[in-house]
Length: 67
Image (cartoon, rainbow, N blue to C red; front, side, top):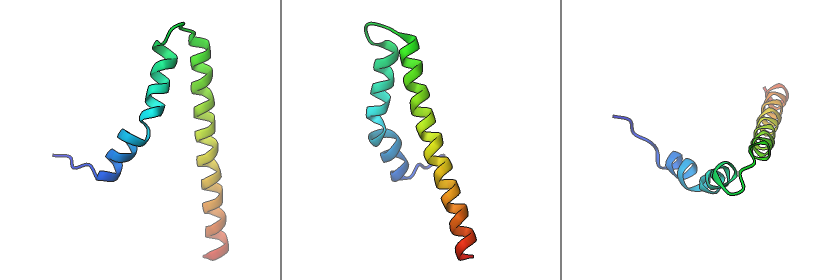
């Protein structure tokens, strides 16, 4: 049996719920414009990758400076 921590349920279920609703609205809303929806998904993905890359570089710099 898989036991999910409360934090995982909270983040994936409640905190990200507006993002899920936004994505569903983009793809299944009226009028349907898949090019615009995919552009929005591309923006969200690029922002996410940029933030993770920045955090990775910052963590590497901290590792070099303090250890």
